[in-house]
Length: 115
Image 1 (cartoon, rainbow, N blue to C red):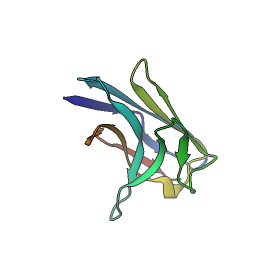
Image 2: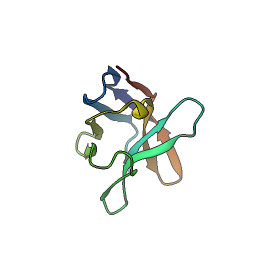
Image 3: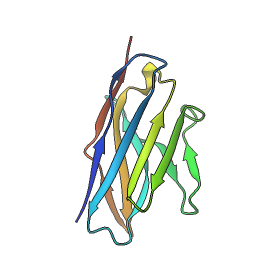
């Protein structure tokens, strides 16, 4: 079994920054820390930033240049640095990992950007 435990998040004002963390534990052989998703109320869960199989970082257009994804494979921890946050970034953020056909999700972290 795999557990993904998220930390970070909270309430910030527009223009401020936050960092989310996602630490994997449990049966970790073959696990791949894939990326970060977010889900706003009434909307579907969308990819925010992730890694391709080649290890390249990819971003949705609305966050490119403001967000940065990174991971420490030795520590099996993934991060999302979010800068210049905007109200439209408000959502619950989830980290995702996979192993073969299995998907694993973090518990979700609320990020609220409001003045």
